[in-house]
Amino acid sequence: MSPVQKIRIASFNVALDRRMPGQLAADIAGAGSRQMHNIGRILRRIRPDVVLLNEFDHDGEGRDYRPLRLFCQRFLAAGEDGIDYPYVYLAATNTGLLAPVRLHGEGEPRLPEDGLGFGAFHGQYGFAVLSRFPLLVTRLRSFRRFLWRDMPNALLPRTEAGPYYSPAALEVLPLSSKNHLDLPVQLPNGRVLHLLACHPAPPIDEGTERRNSCRNHDELRLWHDYVRPGRGDYLIDDAGQRGGLEAGADFVILGDLNADPLDGDGFRDAIQALLADPVLNRSVALGRLRPGSRGGFGLKGVGARRGSPRHWTHSQGLRLDYVLPGRGLQALASGVFWLPPGHAQADLFWNRGWPDRAVSSDHRLVWVDLAAQGVRGVTLSPR
Figure 1 (cartoon, rainbow, N blue to C red):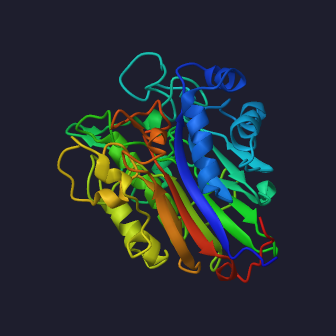
Figure 2 (figure 1 turned 180 degrees about the vertical axis):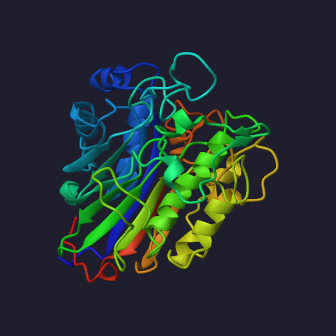
Figure 3 (figure 1 turned 120 degrees about the vertical axis):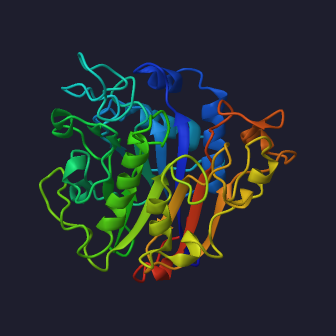
């Protein structure tokens, strides 16, 4: 049997957020919804070796793995086409973690608006990583607690009267709305691939101060600085280690970045600068291997857009979800898994010709295949 020649990396915002803590765990343990079954069908069809799941509710600190493992067992591993992920990780998150001071307005802090990350409860909109290869959890770096004010030249929001956030708020407000996680994966030859996972704040539900747009901008900048030697020297992770990614390390930035380079409500310069930087594999970021599909062409009524439907990953006609390998990695293929209306499996995305979040998600899975020999000479065993 010949060795596998590729590694498939994916990012998928699965929209498995619920209104109450514990509700998702109960849904997984119960009959399971159409949404969960279809998410399972999508993952079994694309079969990524490593996948980031955005918007997977959990306990907030990433300690209770039972719902995630049961989800994998029931919806991914079951059946003739089942796929097994022996290595999983739940990222601790700032969502729904109540700030000790009021972030917006006056009075006592309250959720969701005064969460260190927006959420009705701690762990809402969290994220998880599933992998066929060992996750080097003892070597991970987390930037969940890095304060926004400590980023040099931070784009902190302002009003006509002055700074939007009080000094007391800036003493506790982290930059990361969920977490910024450098999670190394050990590939079969012992080489390491750094998964740089995040889910920045969406640039919505804000006033003229543009606080969420500002935060999204700087959350993207964190990874951009992290992967450029010398630019991330100011960063201090949650264990107290200073600095960015080691020069020459292999990495992939992945997640629902909530930033479209051409359309949408946010500031576009941060995502534009990241995509254009030669530190990334240019063919995937902006070139011929930019992930695409035919599904977006089935959207109607989304309004004027400058970006092509081919590259949309969201039901509002936006490119928000990314898998961005570093320039040292050779990309072979890529895609957005989104079938058009009328396809035999269009029920994974559409309900009577319209995208429906309850069917699977309002986001689409994005995948990139990396050449095994392009990851520092990796040779993989067959699947």
